[in-house]
Image (cartoon, rainbow, N blue to C red; front, side, top):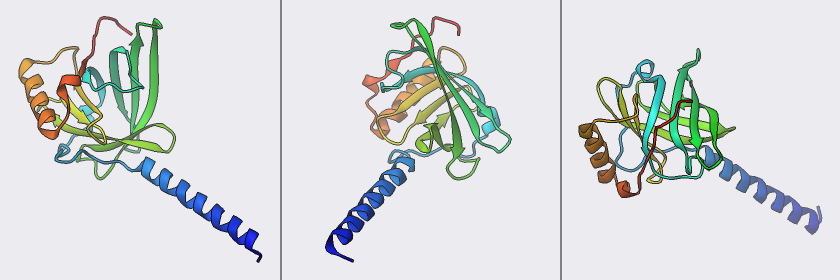
Length: 185
């Protein structure tokens, strides 16, 4: 083989290896340092509709109000995720459907969620009340956190508990966006 062919083969192998590393890292999910997912966890009690009470801002939900997430259990044990929010600027509802799978076992509230093909993100339920009415959900890192409720409000005691826990983990709770709920889908 001549030098040009060897060089082309080496470049192709390097590009393929780099692409594989990017794909592998994009599918990897984690949990923020110090956070622990709820265990035991009962997914059947978790399914249904949750109202987003607060979140850290990110591009997929930027400027949305009336945000909900509805979880349905599939026959294979995975979840379907239907996220919906209203854009006051565009005067329309935005909706995105994805899937969630357990990272380990169904009794540990560590899931990976995908709305875009093979790309997953961490979805870690790190606090939940005993009645499964209020939940604190952490993403892969300290950029993503959600406070969820079965209703459009949350008791002050639960709010304080969740904010304290998020703050202890290093989240900037002052940057939370408190979701407005004033419309029906």
